Amino acid sequence: RPRPVPGHHSGGSAGRTPRGDPAQGQLPPRTPRPRDLPGPRRGQSVTAPVLRWMFQWPYRFVLAGLVRIGLRAWHLTALSVVVAAGVGALLFAGLHLAAGFALLVAGLLDLFDGALARLRGEDSRRGALLDSVMDRAADTIVYGSLFVSEGMRGARVSAGLALAALVVGLLVSHLRAQAEALGTTMTEGMFQRPERVVVLFLGLVVPGALVPALAILTAMGSATVAQRLIA
Image (cartoon, rainbow, N blue to C red):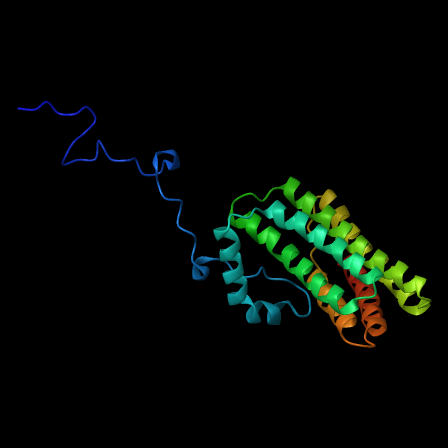
C-alpha cells in the first residue's frame, strides 16, 4: 500500500490552494458590476437632480471601468491637475475649442476621484485635503491662464471677468474650508464645481460665448458666496 503524500487528500481540501490568498494563485476579487455601484452623490446645486438622473448609469459604468483597470483616487487627482495645465497651454495657444474639451476631461477626473476613494475604502480627511488643494490649483491654472492670455491679446473685458471668476471661485472654496475648520459642514450653493465646468466649457467651445459665460460664472459664484454666508 503506497504511503500518502504529505499535505495531500484526495477527497478533501487539505491539498487545495487556500481561497483568499493571492500569493497562492487565487484569482483577483471580482470587479463590481455597474448595477451594484452607487450613483452620483446628491448635490444641492441647481442642476444636481437632473444631472444625477441623466448620468447615473454612465457614471456607474465609468466607475466600474476605473476599478477594473486598477486606478486609485490619487491617480485621478494628479491627472486632473496635469490636464488642467494642458488646458492652460491650449489657452495660451489660442486653441479655445481644444481647451474646452480638455477642461471637460479634467472635470470628469475630478468628479470620479472622490467616488473611487469611497468605493475602495480609502477616503480620509487627508485625502479630502489633497483633493481640495489640487482642485484649487487646477482652477488657478485654468482661470489664471485665461486671464493672462486674454489680456495679452487685448481682450480686457474677458480678462477681467476671468480674474473675477477665479477670485469668486476661490472664495466659495475658502468659506467651505473655514466652516469645516470650525467643525461644521457647508455644502450650500446653487452653483458649484460641476456647473462651473460646464459653463466654462460652453464659453470656450461656442463662438462668442466666452464673455457671457464668464459673466455667469462671476454672478452665480457671488450668489453662492452670499448663500453660504447667510446659511
